[in-house]
Image (tube, rainbow, N blue to C red):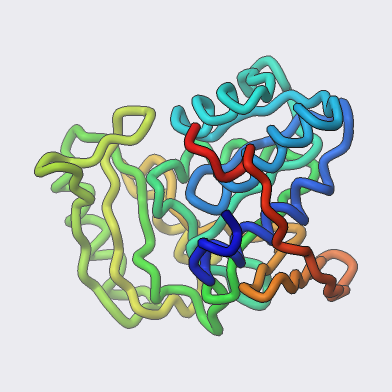
Length: 260
């Protein structure tokens, strides 16, 4: 129940609830991946059940698709949707210009494709995700398994001349084996500490043979909704240049907090 949540989870809860309130009947909605996005899916499922909200969700990962189906959201593919009215997702980091690092959950390729197909992209996050400069969170890049060590070597050479502070690269592992994305690819995590020019680095990485996509989301996010543990919610709109704040009551809801 809300009273039993950690401060971070309370912040994620209220940010996700505010974002869920933005979704209107008949919308095609991109559903993100990760712990904050999971709160969103549950909030939307609550609205589907209690309000009769009719939406079609395009999940960015298999685990989001499973959760969406369990809470009663109609799940379709991006090919079936064509374009999306809105995508709501979390982020591992965001800066003042709403540039993001995403991919901590390993779904960065699907997340970026879905975001690019959306009329509006909204990021939901707790306040700890905001940074002055991107890079403290390791930057994920998705690479094909074939020749991945060669790809890593090429990326290492690129980083030497890039405006970054760190140069260490690690292969993401899962239970002693290389982590596999939903597309069957590997993830290399770039420990850069600081990224001086996110746009330039994103373009350079995607020119590397073997790199499928990188976790820098530049000029894709329209709004960020920041949640706080006391129920405050701040919404920043990069297009309108506005900042608004309100508060959400942390009330008990058995549907959201029961095991699914």
